[in-house]
Image (cartoon, rainbow over all chains, first blue to last red; front, side):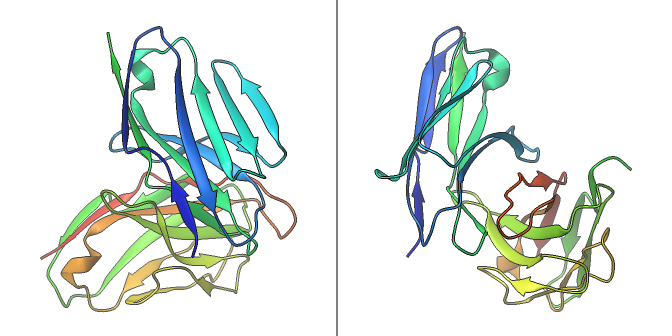
Amino acid sequence: GQNIDQPTEMTATEGAIVQINCTYQTSGFNGLFWYQQHAGEAPTFLSYNVLDGLEEKGRFSSFLSRSKGYSYLLLKELQMKDSASYLCAVMDSNYQLIWGAGTKLIIKP
Amino acid sequence: IAGITQAPTSQILAAGRRMTLRCTQDMRHNAMYWYRQDLGLGLRLIHYSNTAGTTGKGEVPDGYSVSRANTDDFPLTLASAVPSQTSVYFCASSDSTRGSVNEQFFGPGTRLTVL
């Protein structure tokens, strides 16, 4: 079966760094996405990785290791507005997205 | 219109009633999707459409139907609602074809309660 695993909840302090991990087992791989979803709102796109390595975009970076079926999202200089759920999703061989349940990130002052 | 709109924003529905959730996008994206999101679960694909005139079944299609008469609109119909269809429904679109991957853009969602 297809499976995406990520921690249910994480807590971090304003100004700090947090790493949200995602492991996956899917039928085929056409890239991995990270989305941010604030409570009561729609998911919004953060990053896309299809090759191994680190992609940096401002305060957010995303890493992929295809051989390990592993990705992480790194958030630096945390701000209160970063309090949200972070969704990991893998595009499978049929070009359909398989979604993890999301990691709720709580930022404390 | 800018992006994707969904209607209604929320709805309370009696079990057994028929309901259509509307979705319209103005980005001329070829692909559109319907997901449901339930607490503790990831987004689950209900139906999708890769281009106008075609539709396909996702992970959880039972009890739902869709149509794609044109590029912009992708309505989702619950023929006879049941309480297990209580959920938040998201419509999404992307400019994606097989071999060309782009992100999906999401509408604001419809919160549906079936009693």
